[in-house]
Image 1 (cartoon, rainbow, N blue to C red):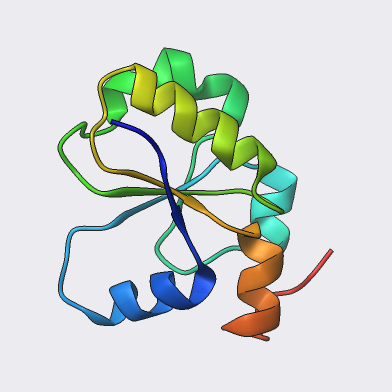
Image 2: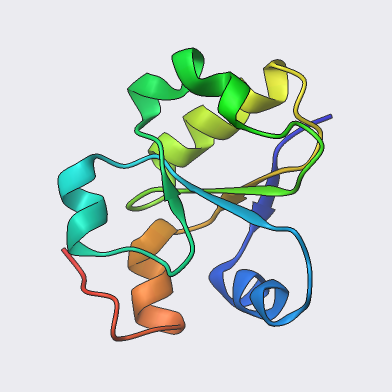
Length: 107
């Protein structure tokens, strides 16, 4: 399996459907406190290996960061760890703020 890329507009549509999406934010706590997508769960990139058991490998997981680089690293790690439905949010929270929700602050 490989990591799938999800645009912010595709995520916005998915969030309007009844599904079990898990939004995994891999930024640092200060970034998360400043701006986040409602319902997302913070797990900084460097904590993922130790906290892997907190995640459901059968669930759709959308990995989020600032611009999409750290989230791609995390998504690839999850993919290699046996997670089957992993998505990287293209453009990260910055693109989300620009295209979907201007109430989310940019930095």
